[in-house]
Length: 222
Image (cartoon, rainbow, N blue to C red; front, top):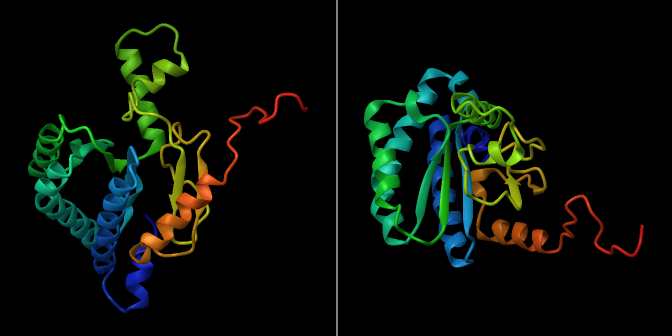
């Protein structure tokens, strides 16, 4: 979800205003995902690298996350959404950690959209955490399944479609293991302006892709 800061700068607003508007876009996409019967949605909300931003912006982001979790709690539960928070949340204030854990538990028995919110998340750090779990368990030989089973997304399917807004054409340490065969959709639109029209455009584009997973669509031809 890229482009919040640039969106705010274009309007001569503080960067946190862009993040607030970006939150509105996120809520729209969650609703659309439910409507279109999408099973899994992951939103890259706060990366391990975001701590390097100005202290005032980081403080504002954490406050926005705290407030949005509180306000959206009942709505998420009532819409039958299962929510998971990916990443290392132990660095957050204790009160926020408690809110995140409580919301996960509250929605654990729902069976609708699985909504992953990546907070203090980095793809490399996630893989390192998985490997360290295996080391702690005295795993002598490691397979791909062993690693996948110890990722933050354990038990979930790999990513089918990755959407990046804001014109950047890179992965930026997001779900590195899970996107091995994902279709990558890049769009110039800044995240706060990302609307239903853009989301449907991405879904339509995805449906036209021919996914071969390293093989051939027609095995009779080389």
